[in-house]
Length: 282
Image (spheres, rainbow, N blue to C red):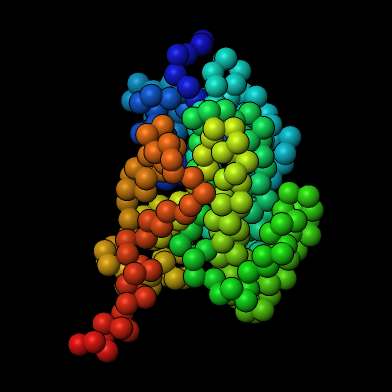
């Protein structure tokens, strides 16, 4: 069945942020949810359908270029143009090894971005979900030179992330790999801005802080909870609060917004930055 609505692809679409974003964008877009789990996709599509939204689910492995191409072919199969992509798929430090984190969070982002760029047109938008962790990683641990290998030599690129992560020891290695991978997502979104702009399209990254999602709660006792203590708003964020930002960035209204990262952290960075200065001042 064809639709008059443009299509929005949401990777990680069955997660808290992804599904909340789909619920907003589904008001004026046909939604294509991507995830590895068919059962979760079926449940999410059913939830959107009950809300009167046009949605389908596609099993996709973002680390596999062929699987990503299949995702976009399915998204275009009803003659609808893919106008927006919200790339929310990813794993946290407690969901895998440093190697797995680098492959999914970093190389997976490259695969989604390049596939969308190849078909992007005027008014289209890519929104990559990064993390506040990407802002906090010390520069000495950021393999900036290797970032430029991401498209041509992904294996070497991933090895560089893992190699830097080894400096903090085995226990903290996944956490640093995660922070580096999200720093890359922020960098890569800036890097791609000119290429997307040449097609009249936009690309931004959004960096959530501590949010009340299944993934966010996994990290509650491993850093996320501590970050809330430093925040201006001392609670976990709600999925719908970051979804509002993701949907806005992916929409047509902010047509001059590109090549930038938007931090949605409840004032955590601001709180940490000025905490010591405030104590000294008073």
